[in-house]
Length: 126
Image 1 (tube, rainbow, N blue to C red):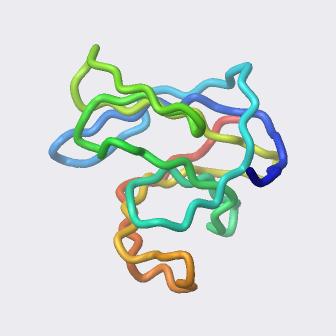
Image 2 (image 1 turned 90 degrees about the horizontal axis):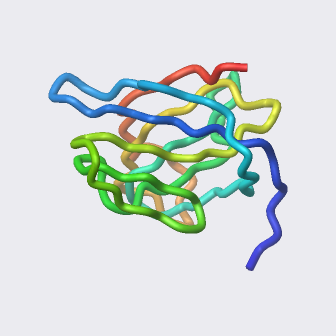
């Protein structure tokens, strides 16, 4: 296991509808998670700095059309509400916003982001 720096965290609740994704709620939580930079194809919530550079990405392991609560180390699938995603992301001091993305082409050896579809971006509260 790789050692990663620990930082404060934020729980984000997203709602998915036919017209897109929206951030319903965000609040700090007493969980410290490490920064992750997963480079596989899939759905992610990316934490980005003011210039749009990815600081960390938390995988959404079950797809964005279902109801889920995800922690980076231990995904949990919930069924209380339809088309809702709850995710805990690291929020270091340089974090400015998050982006919900679908990464269709990125591989471990890829340096291009041409396969990333941004489904929505949202500012983090301080």
